Length: 72
Length: 207
Image 1 (cartoon, helix red, strand yellow):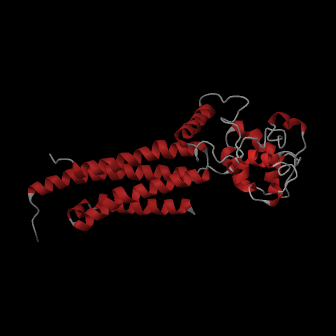
Image 2 (spheres, one colour):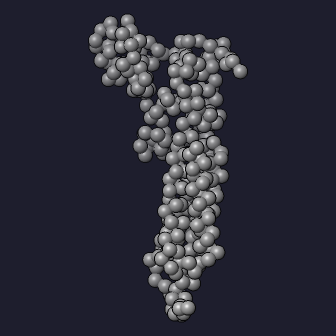
Image 3 (cartoon, chains in turn cyan, red):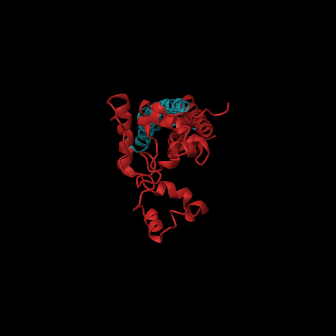
């Protein structure tokens, strides 16, 4: 079995922490968007865009940022 | 159907993300990186876009428009028992789909084809409905455009060969170029007439 070098391990720990946070935000965004789709009302569109869209976009940006950011 | 597609896509995304959270070490391998890219970027973007399209599609429904209090009388006017009321005659005789009656005759309204300015007006309507106070009586932002009538009537025999429409070639040209309004030139001018709604008879649809 191949040993993972300590440098790679710490980088992985850093990225996986970011990925977890990003994943949680995306799941929250999808939940809000899913609930808004079950309600046919002008306010549901605001909830979809203002809350769901914001959570989803934050999660995606956090993921993309984790990919390109320098590991401490 | 579209709602179900969005919910299924969201469920698949959640499953991918749950896998990443439960076993983050899979991202060390190439396959795990692909799962992360799909679950944290591609699928959520698609789910968001599909959800947005779904919301836009549903906002064409008559019930959506009438969910604002200020639109209530306009909804009532669709049931006036008088064929000279243009919206009522169209609604009751299925000349427009009843479930999308408002949108069929107001295609340029707010969110649909009116550009950024129109979309901002849509947001302003939300503000006026829930925080501010809507103008009374409400008015169209721009005069009613004949295009809304012509996208169905243009080319129809009754319209093209109608005695008044074809009496003079200039009349037809003016109607088609929106110089002569269908609704405010004294020809088809009984539109919603909401100020008269307490003095008219109503049609009751068969259950």
